[in-house]
Length: 211
Length: 246
Image 1 (cartoon, one colour):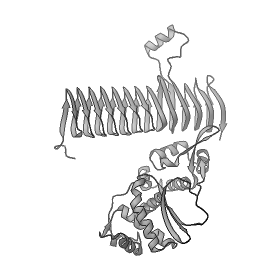
Image 2 (cartoon, chains in turn brown, blue; image 1 turned 180 degrees about the vertical axis):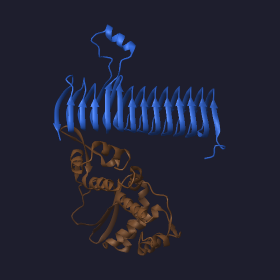
Image 3 (cartoon, chains in turn yellow, blue; image 1 turned 45 degrees about the horizontal axis):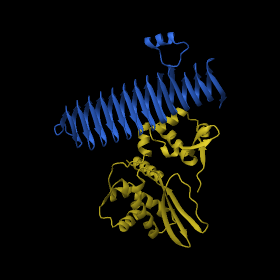
Image 4 (cartoon, one colour; image 1 turned 135 degrees about the horizontal axis):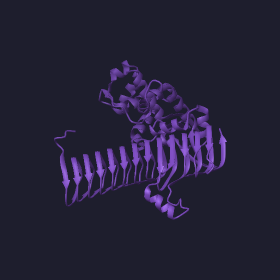
């Protein structure tokens, strides 16, 4: 699971943006601090980025920046939750998550309230994604959602990734901070993984469009 | 918050208090607060020590202030000395005295006429200096406009427009210089590892790497590598070991 890195110079060449733009986006927190990875090279220190993430992000910013201000983009890509509350019916009507996800979530957590805040909707969204992927059954998805709900607070503002693996048919789930490198032994079947920051972004875009 | 519920705090002697929420805070003597302070305006003529976080609208320090925690303020004007142990987020910062920050400094406008030391990173939209500064991490600012007086240093500078010029001499300095010749000992200079920006102009600068779109090197510079995209100019009085167009 080694992440491929790209140097700052290559990145600017590839995307055609200038140093000024890169620094401005960093200042606005559109490009998160932890993506700037310092490594020593023969000319002193150089900055590297996780290649897939940064290219995807810059593409996204370029698309959005004609219609939205930099601050609006920062809101969408930031980790901070949006203040909103949706009832179960609204979520279904706006087609934000599927009814299977909601029903399962309610039965996992013995959820008694009939409305959801941003965190709740985020778990629903992840659950929905997991179930739709078709690789994980309902009992196993319960494991993922519960461990997420228990441990997400500990990551605070940092980005994290959720992994789901199986070894000899026994399922297990863990959460790690991002960027990282993980190696598994060869018996482990790697079933599913998702990045939390991109989940939050997806969800914010869905919520924005459906407004 | 309602203005009515907040009281003013005025200290003329020596006091130790728990923190709290106030409207105007004025200190002529010496005050130590043992927890967070929140106020709409504060004015320090004596000594203020806050062991906790500060959240303020406007602040002015003529004497000495020490914040052992994070600072959040709209406008902060420092004529005396201020120490900040945590991170600070200030909209409009003006320093004519001395500011020392152990954490990161995040601001919209920074104006320096005195001396600023930041151990972490410094982020601003506009960074203007006619004094001295030392930044341990990255100075990231849209516009960097520096007139060098005294020793300035930073690990990295990144931004759109970066302009570093030699400070103009005032009368007394000219007099000293005319007696002790040849003395550029008192001249301000900037020591730095990397500068990256769109438009860069440098004077009196010692840098390892300069990367930019348009790079112009003025007099008295010692640069290791210059990497430029469009334009490169070099003054005769400066040395650049290597320059390449990308």
